[in-house]
Length: 603
Image (cartoon, rainbow, N blue to C red; front, top):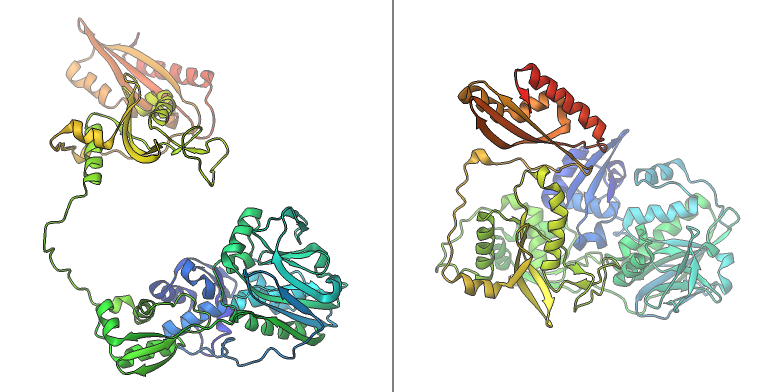
């Protein structure tokens, strides 16, 4: 969620600290910060809002409330603190909810608006969110969404037949052209907004083009609703149409927020677009209230490992704007309507811990184990099998669990080519061997040897298998249980490798490599000069040809009289293009000339 520091400041009388300090405060008490971007006099914080807080913190008000609690400073104008009624009510519009997946739908009717450009301050606020200005009506709905978290939409009232709105599930094959100009085919799992004749919106996702606002619009119907989060998420995913609105609904938001959103956007539209508020129609079948929860001071201190006092805990609940009272040795706490994540006493304890600061919780050493920990035989034998193959020179691979044939079909297919779960490891291992063989020289390996430990699905069950393949052996596998029985007593392999043999792993180029061999005689002293050539060959050749030489290896050496023959395999490869034979031939000629000049005789 992009959060503007200047926008946050509107919630406070006292000056806020700079963006870096705000970022640290949020990081150590609630959310990580992915980055801070300086934008003129403003700073934009990229706040990584976790899934459990998407219902209340995908907004500037939500983040402002967190900062208020963390820094113990008061919000000057909390939008949720105002007491108001949705009045006046009107029967000039009506709403019918014909699905349990809509928890509330408020329609507001405003007539006589003048659609036009938004004021500069509103354009600037939306620009901070990466949003372009559309017009004053659409901008007002977007501003309120980013301000308090309630998605909103506005229809041209003249395009809504009889001003009657219904919320229902789509019919199979029903189609609607959205505001983006694309036509979408719907199914009964999706919620839609309709008038007496046609669809005017995909609930929680996108409005319809037929009822869109334009410069001729004078009367509008505003939607502030609450839709089932899972239904909205599935519809947005199926239609490949994820929007700022759908990303908020799918997190689950309180139906109570719809009233605050409606009041805020209606007032803003009257301010910047003029018009007359005719009234509201509020369809709210089942009102929502957060139930009170009880937690004791002893529970809080026991779970957190603290010695907090009653006054310290009371202060935290006050800073969080929780309605609470003390009953005996317990706190009876009623969370604010927007905090849907607080459902059990442990949630309240977590709130106390994070606001106090986890750095304030003393470190306590864990007591020693009363008995020897048990070893999980499943993981024990997997590690033993892994050690055995590694000692024998095998490399571990992880091949795909999806296959083009098998017993078990995947419900949510990754692609249409491999719709099954694999029934063996051997197919994947064989394929991996073929893929790695062309790179053997590049990898500097004498032989490709691979193994895999993984799950297969066959004979109606899941089974862990151990498989291997090499250039000299066909792919074979056995179950982990069979492997355990064949090995008998536990194995003990020690990989005693000196630190000096550690390699730096890096990706190699996607472009093909070219192999060339070169051999030459030397008549120089074996101990001194020949040893120098073999140990520094890569460095010596690289000096002549640059970074195109990615590997050199001495693969043959023999002596004849007072001469020693050395044969090197050279691997050439580029990270930005495919090398040509002619290019490499020229390099080899340069290498030959250099070796000759140094007294070596090319064979």
